[in-house]
Amino acid sequence: MTGMTTGNPFPTTPSGLSRRNLLGAALAAGAAVPNRLAGPAAAAGAGAGAGAGPASGPETGSAAPGAPAASGSPTTLTFPRPTGPHRVGVVDLRLVDKTRPDPTAGPGAFRELMVSVWYPARDTARYQLAPWMPAAVFTPYAIDAGFDPSAFAVPLTAGRTGAPVLRAERRLPVVVYSHGAHSHRADNTNAVQELASHGFAVVTIAHTYDTWVQFPDGRILSPSHIPMGPPDFAADARSVLDAIDALAAGRNPDADGKQLPAGLAGSLDARRVGMFGWSKGGTATVDTMLADHRVRAGLSFDGPMAPEITTDLDRPVLMMTAENTRADNPDVAEAWSHLKGWRLNVYADGAAHSSYSDVESLIPQLAKILGMSQADLESWIGTLNPAEGAHMQQAYPSAFFDLHLRGRRSRLMEAASPAFPDLKYLP
Image (cartoon, rainbow, N blue to C red; front, side, top):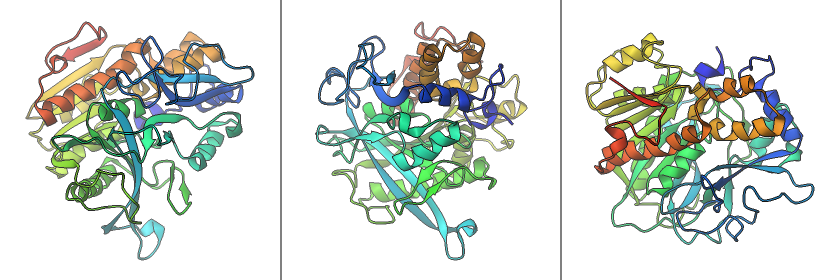
């Protein structure tokens, strides 16, 4: 099964060249992948909210996109800038669910997860930008992709590690994120940072044995051959919901007692929780909602909905599809028939499966660096306009969770918008 159905973003292109090797060739040639953010047409600082200043300022320490690179410096890839008014903070936590034995890890071991909590932050200037992945994880990830990891820096995110939580009149609504198969919890950083910049707390899950992950004691795990289906992902999500309950109650769920960012304990609203996921994570979102009423609303980025979902669900679900459509995938059609509450199916005409991940922003830039053929580029992201694809990753989750967790009306949840000409609202 290819990555177009599993969530692994490295299938083979029409030319027969592995996408891992395509990416590797680009980076070995000097193209770095720092996840520094830029506005749609102009530069903006990494980790900056609206009006936070230019990318060349002290928030980033790097030149604006489009500016000539320093002699010998690698090319910089950019992501869309979060559009919300808030700066972003992030902290990694280790969770251990003592109700779930982990026989793979040996006798007496329990299910262990790494998560990242993203949130609106304040007083961020003295806090470092968090890497897209820890360096110790990115190195084997890069080697597996087929290139020399010393040729470029670890990508950066908009999140300031450990920055204090922004004080707000109400507790923060929470969104849980589940990644694609054999991927990583950063594979939708664009969408996650956008939500945090608009005042949501977002908890991204690293599904152990199906991802690249580092634990605080130095252990590094890569995707394994241990079978993990959407129900296993959903079980992880329920463990994370327990951790959210603990944070909401003012407790620290970190298994090592790690110091939390100032203001995080007691800042989450466990009564307003949503979930979204890409590919297998999209299916796991619906599975989690069926198993746990704590998730009030769910969004699936092209989830295949397999194994077949046969139970009715009365809470809001947004299906954003590309390759896993109701017309082409009977499991998706079956799942749709069981959605008995608010529901919406938006189809991105011309999109590929990976258009619902950070690939949509990165690969068009790499294509120019590599001189990639149009056929190879389209094998990654389809024919959907990349700017439209990256923008939809930001706009639709924010609109959906604004409506169903905050009660704020959004026109995007009612009818097609001229801003997204390729997105079709299906009956």
